[in-house]
Image (cartoon, rainbow, N blue to C red; front, side):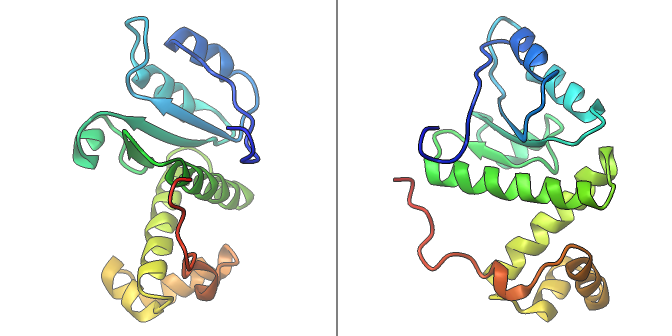
Length: 171
């Protein structure tokens, strides 16, 4: 991942991945199809037990997001292969930032995961509605005051999440 600001380490098996996770990382990009007969679910389980939350992005060939959710990935960003490098970088950047936000509020475990899921949905809707907080609250089925409170807690502004004028094209 040269030239992107990311430094990476590669694990080619579940055993390698579990060994690497004992170190300090900002993010984990996990292939659902790890080698050596192991299951990537083992890695996800270990990630869920770590005291300090780590941003996780999963990729694989499950066919659809619904297929990935059957594996217990609800709330974890999933990229179907093949994916554009720009999509990967944008997803990693957003997941790391969301992890930092919830960690700064002292959230860990399932609470942090659920909060990141809500924040991801909020940010996505803020982008697609060009910052229309009323529409976002209606589409997510949450009170507008809750949306405003979450934005205030995390220091979010509608204008900051309108998205790039030219989204990454993977080059």
